[in-house]
Length: 102
Image (cartoon, rainbow, N blue to C red; front, side):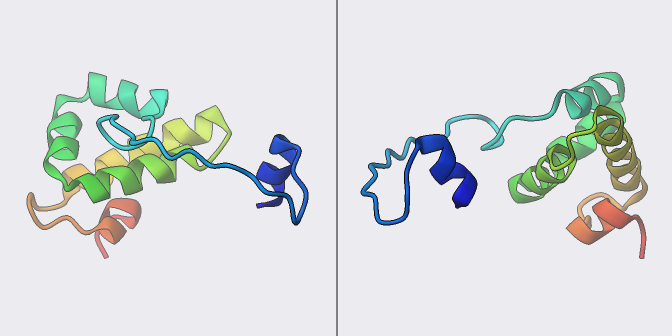
C-alpha cells in the first residue's frame, strides 16, 4: 500500500524483495497490554478467552488493537470480555462477543 511504499522508499514500478517469516507467537499477533491486564485480573474472562477458537481470539485481539486511544482499548477489552462471559460456553459467535447477545 502507499504507506508501506513510502516507508520503504519505493515507488510504483520499483522492484522490491519481500521476506516472509513464520509468526511463531501464540496468537499470530501481539496481544494489546489492555487485554492482557483484563485477562490477568479476571480469571473467568481468561478461562473463557482461552476456550474460544484461535480465530476468534485473533478477531478479539485485532478489534481491540484497531484503535489508537488507550482508554478506548481498555473499554473494548472490558466490554468484549463481559460479552464473552455472558454467552453460553461453547456456543460463542464472534458477532455476539463483539455486540453482546443479539
